Image (cartoon, rainbow, N blue to C red; front, side, top):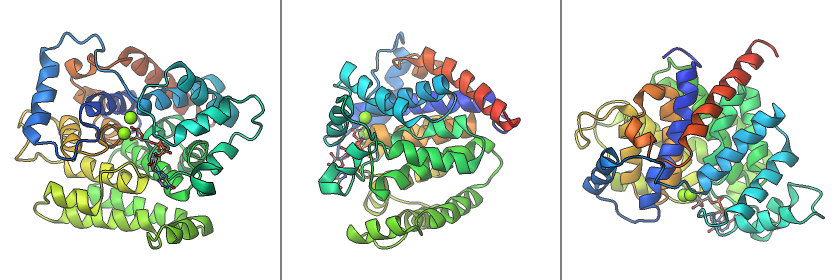
Length: 347
Ligand code: R7I
Ligand code: MG
Ligand code: MG
């Protein structure tokens, strides 16, 4: 697969969909034995498909992002906010975070004029640090070839629901990881090095420093966790318990975005505990589910990165056909590809 090829665009969006639909089975489970994961994934091969696995809020919001970017051909905060709120009103039972639904209700009020204000009012004015901004960040890497735009719009879109820098910086990191994977070529250490450098700049901003201190996370929390990822990858083996205790598997962006990046990088090579016929994308999803916790969200983020890296060729048809809405997903990937190419040519 060549750099920024159509296969990578299709892989990104389909990977994200797969991670959410397949991960929903285990969301919130404390321990997920690997043989249960393998059994669950194996059952997809016996199914007729037909989109029987429903997607959750992760995909519902990602679809809004894609549709807004395509219909406006750019980032439009009012249009984006309206789509999130309308989607919530249409299908409120997709498993949304307990706090974010208050944002949607305020956005649905016709008197709301500043679409960023409801997010600022969350959690006593501190804003949410949940991973809801990060879980929907992948499309920004597909709509914008320029890394500055990827960062800027992933952050602005996250700020519609997540005003804490520990929330929106997670979205920046996730979009950056997809952006790098989409370009291909890098080895894992270079990939991490670039992410750490980028996040050190992002986290050096005043609000990032003060938010992190207020939550007792210390300075540069995302950059520090990426260093931990590096340390894990340099070892011969890492136990799942250690990944969970050091990187996390929770609903905070800080406890899930670096974890998703670890899942992708750790699964670049075959793992002895996974079936030998699994390809890299299948390994990434299986491993993400085995961590337990916020499995749909960690898997959707890890598989979006993996899909950008490996391309659509690694997405098994029988896995894909089980996921609700897979046809539109592929169609949208093609349209995002055109938009990206248009911009890359200076359009
Ligand atoms: O971040 P968000 O959209 O939730 C996404 C998660 C994903 O796992 C989805 O799959 C879905 O299951 O939900 O929604 P928020 O409500 O903004 O944040 C999620 C949760 O994080 C909140 O309900 C809180 O429990 C917690 N949280 C906080 N708790 C205390 N103080 C987020 N921010 C804070 C905070 O500032
Ligand atoms: Mg979800
Ligand atoms: Mg989740």
